[in-house]
Each structure stands twice: as C-alpha cells, then as structure tokens.
Image (cartoon, rainbow, N blue to C red; front, side):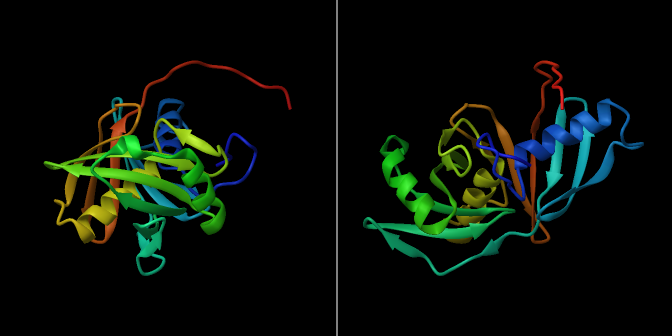
Length: 191
C-alpha cells in the first residue's frame, strides 16, 4: 500500500477490503474467500456482494498508556501503529496536536467516542499528513482499545468521519473488519 505522499504503508484496512473485492470481481481469485499478502502479513478476505470482511493481523499493545497534553493515549499496532484517545467530544480534534503526536511517535493519531455500543472515530493519518474520512486500521485500533479499556462489546458498529457504517468484531484474538465496498470509477496510468 502507498500513501498519497508516495510513502509505503505496511497495511491499510479499507485498502485491503477494496483490493479483495477487486480481485474477486476481476477473476484474480477462484473463491469468495482467500488470502491477501500485505506488508504486515497475511490477511484473510471474504467477499459477499458489496460486503467485504477482512481478518486483520493480530493487534498488539505497543506501550503502557501515554500522557500527552493532559490526555491519556493508548498505543496499538493493528497492521500499522496508532495512538488512540477516548473523548466525549470529537469536535476536540486538533490537527496541530495530531501532527505533533504523529511526528513524535511515527503513528497515526485517533480520537474516538464510545457511546451506547457505538464507536465514532476521527483519524489523522501518516502519509496523508491530515485528517482522513476513514482509516480502517485506525477504527480497528480504537475498537481494540474500547474492548480493553471501556468494556465494549466484542462486536460493534463503527462510524468514521465519512459517516459510513462499518463493523468490527474480535474473535480468537483477531479483529474482523467489514463493510460495503463500492466501485467508483475506472482509470489507467501509463508507466
């Protein structure tokens, strides 16, 4: 996977789902269930119509909770490193603060709100160097943190800034990430 600035990323949750659907629709695989090889390891994919589910690599805790700017940050790896802070107000998303944390820890930075069985997430991504509409591994990191620290259920609906509904569940130590994948356009480039 490559970021918009051309830098390499070992894993992309949404990119994995999109690649899986593309491979299936274009006959690159012979079954609706198959493995994708990523820089973070093998990712199992399952395609059913527009819904694609991927089994992400096992999440890892990278450190004890960190204190930055008076806030508690959890540090996880869900294919790539993510800082996670749980808040009651997602409007507190401060791009300058996120940029500084991203540079200090070389990680994506996420704010998450867990309320009534629903998780809402905003993410500042490496390689984009700004907030994005959705980050699959970021949502996975927030979900993992919510199960560990907030007694969240092992299956949740998650909403990124885009508002799209995605599903995350924890099963046998792995995070399963699902949602619709839609074909937007075709293009070609000359190499």
